[in-house]
Image (cartoon, rainbow, N blue to C red; front, side, top):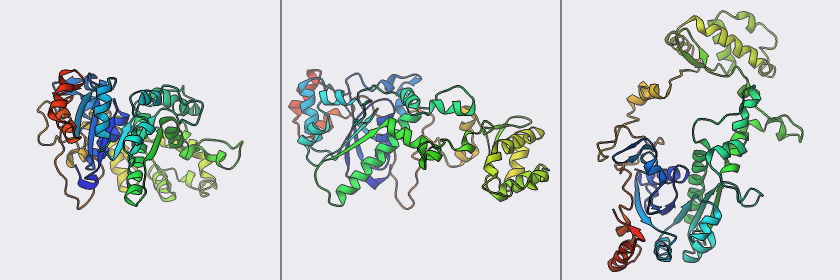
Length: 396
């Protein structure tokens, strides 16, 4: 944990991946993140696989947070959270707008309680368009944004990317949106700030960054970045496995073709012209594919590294756990104080030189900090006890 956002209090009302991932990044950077859960908890706490301290999905997205469990459907729960909102710098949620409004978490309700709050809503679709009320999950956004259909441009059937990419892309947009609002406030901006992070628009912009292509200049311009959409752009077979190779610059292509004895390609007029070569990228990738089965992966990695040609082994998920680079930097090391059931953890990958880091705290039990959080919000011990006995608040 780094002290960069020390003194910032963020209320995170979220579940599963999008909100928790964003909240964890902000907590890693030193913000006090209070995760608000229903009395039955974030469903990720129970998602398979689970250990004695919770589900892996929950444990990998909720470190360095404090935990408040409260029933926001009860008037007493809404009133208690309102006390907490009055002490916060940021309110962040990732629920549908109508659900947030019903729970008193919409911008108007929250800014009425705290006129200087930063209100960030990560939602499925932007509220200015006709999709505003649609439910959204990662698969739906991968489909709607064009990501799932992108495979059809290479001749393959549409498919989902096998990771919750839409959730995590939107989470990163939420982080920079919140931090930009904090900077604006520190620079003297007054009043509440409303930040809207629509998953659909975020992933569409992410996808079209390179694929808008000719449509950037003409209404009938062709979309798609040709090299990326080449059906031959893929990991290549070697004599004993797979390898990724990407000659990219003039020097790298010359060096690779020399390595495989294809000087005849270098002598082609189109090869010398950087404007013409992209039109032949499929043929060049086919040459790469034809040449690599002659040698082992290790042999190719050594030869290509010697020529400074970008390349990599292609590990599967278990292979990533044994990666020598990740092992050397302690990527999966478990912080001191984590429960013994956790054998690997994931780090905050952004490094800040010269900033002293404190130890990370493990994801905590449901409602572990409820009493302390409400006390800090100005509630008396008697009032808190009444909420706990009445089943409005859970305290582990």
